[in-house]
Length: 315
Ligand code: T6T
Image 1 (spheres, helix red, strand yellow):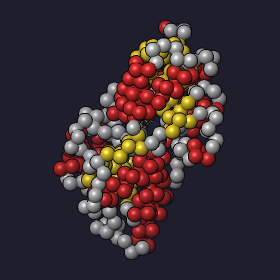
Image 2 (cartoon, rainbow, N blue to C red; image 1 turned 60 degrees about the horizontal axis):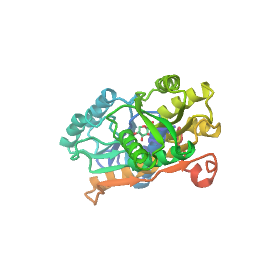
Image 3 (cartoon, protein in one colour; image 1 turned 120 degrees about the horizontal axis):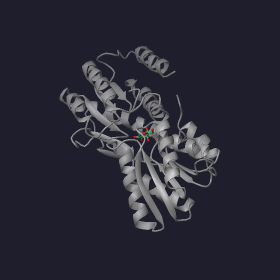
Image 4 (cartoon, rainbow, N blue to C red; image 1 turned 45 degrees about the vertical axis):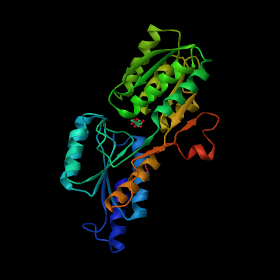
């Protein structure tokens, strides 16, 4: 579907007399993980904005959220010399070198969702305020467990700027305002659904009185929820998950998870194309653009404003 849309875009450009080479601004979006609903929704937002601005946009992504798979993709994009690169770096350190290459080739770099530690990389950084999102998750989970009990945090990997910020926001909020809540710390699922399930099963065996789980992203949440369901802990162990993919929304409806923190990936993608276009045209670029997040519950999941922020698997 997306390929057809990109082809249609090229045709539309050709149709309006805009030659693809030399004429239209050429941008490539490198996702953190191809096919995942967060990044697919981001691509849809970016493609819609590209059509509006007459930008030639190509979308690529690794099959795993892994810098060793993302680096060769960036290298081949750099070799194709687009005018600009939108990217969600999969590690704060490991992606500095390939992005430095892109910068040295004067490719305009816009960071969407995640960032790298080198502040000189990325003319604009567009992302959810993840520290704030983590704090909101802590408040929601504490409320669900009556302000007392043990909670576990499940994340993907250290070195992923977004989820690290969510953990920071969560832990700070728990320490600052929820004295009855004990955090058992973070365990890492390597963004693998099965691994996340294993972690929750082990945690339930070690702490049968576990009261709550905070899962920092889509795959961690899906796996943690499946384990709670299989362990028959629905409603007994409460969960808050980041993201709002179809599997998570089903878990919300089934009472496996009590609240989701939905980001605005479509808006992040659209703003990314806007900033890339401005950078290539030598116009004003905004260095940091925080985007909002919405708390989704069973009570509001079918309201029109919330339905709009649920992630899609395609455009
Ligand atoms: O949570 C999103 C994204 O913000 C994060 O950087 C990586 O994981 C997701 O893509 C969801 O799996």
